[in-house]
Amino acid sequence: MMESQGRTKVWFIVALCLLVLVGGYFFAEWLMGGRERFRGAAPDQPPVPLIAPVAYPVIEDLEEVAQYTQDKPLPVEADYSLYLPETTHPEHTRGNISNDIILVEYAGITSLYTQIVHSRLIDFVEKNGDRLYWIFRHYPGDRNEADFRAGQATECITEQLGNDAFWLFLDVLLEERNSAMTVDYLVSKGTQVGADESILRACIEEEQLYDYVLLDERTAVTEAGIYVAPSFIFLNRRTNSMRIIEGINKMEYMQAVLDDVAK
Image (cartoon, rainbow, N blue to C red; front, side, top):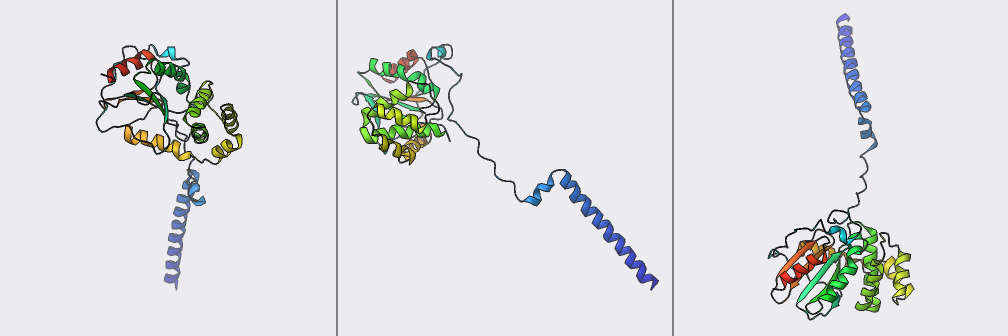
């Protein structure tokens, strides 16, 4: 009888020790933050907004790039695996479409760099109007709603009024340093170039042409090797010679690249 009671006492002590050890382990885990395990898995963190990269330094005026581009070598011939992709939606062209040299701009409309360089590009294309024409394609910042919204608005204008209205609208948008471009703002500017307000608003709010903007960006990355906004492609259709410029540069540099690709 005494022997049975002794064994019971031993097992009681062993169980008590195990209970203390297990309890101590979980208590330590709780103190170190392990208590979160009892609440289920931690919720996924919201994604950090990614903006299409731009060429540095940050500038306020095109003249400030003079030092940045000093002695900058001309871009070499683009790799043979890269090419200018076609689009499945109307192309936005400016200038004589029969000219040999295509200048393709990939840019986000709310980008300060795009806004800074735009008026200079107009002069550049007009100056070289006998051999160059300009195409604008969208390169919105990743998850940058304002960029996507502005890009869609330009496509809505094109669908409603055509290519010439696209450029009028783009010129109006890029005259101002505006990074927000709300629906109301875009509709207001759109009516200035002759758009029907209700049709334009519905087109933007319902994201009817969202895919047009997204496709431009995707093909830029996967087929033309564009990773910086804005970027510019010079393509000689006669020789298939191609040069790619990242960021914004002095117009003298752009002219030198044009002269090089035109050879």
